[in-house]
Image (cartoon, rainbow, N blue to C red):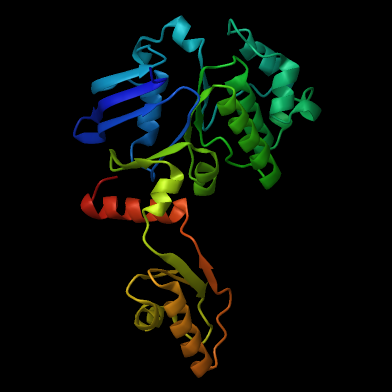
Length: 311
């Protein structure tokens, strides 16, 4: 049996349809990343799975429970890391971990939780004195203190420095390896690509793609060629100019030019030949494999075009 089952889920607020027939499963021990731009419906889906909102229609099951009933046995087996938890500032880190642990029948020891989240050195400091990244670690500690079978992580590494992000990635991977089911939402596409066994992409309230990160990436035909626009070329002229050299898929972001191409060797040959003729140096010229971010941008851009005006 799947740890999480969602069938034809709908949620609407009057005429605003936030979720439109979403279906997916998450297997026990799987790390599943639910992605989508703001307004795509992912927060609504997660809040329904956590039991914080009721569905308008459809079927939802988490560990065999209906989350909307908010049963004690259900609450005892899930962990939730919200975007903002409102942890009490006056408590020390150790005190707040122990307080939250008391709500669970099965729990990790305080010292284990502090070690897993890198909070050992901050155990006796007040929560209110911590930095934003350290407070986010406290949120993560409270999410895992009850040894949950399913852990919901909503933007868990926001505000983390690179070393803290890596520590959290290691923890999430360890939880998955130990059998915890993890449902992750994040705007860091490298995070989803690194951690997720499978990815679901929402757009305008519907599931527009679902697969493993590698399978989604392999679905993009072509290689990414990119470089920084030379100072001698105006941004208003860039796309038209380089479309002649690189093909029609040229994109401009700031002063970064990139294109997804089928035959990278030919394109690079034409591009560098043109640059030599013009006596122009192409700073930061790179030829790279597509990433999950490239997939995401293509998918969500298509979804936006198909549903204009949706927020």
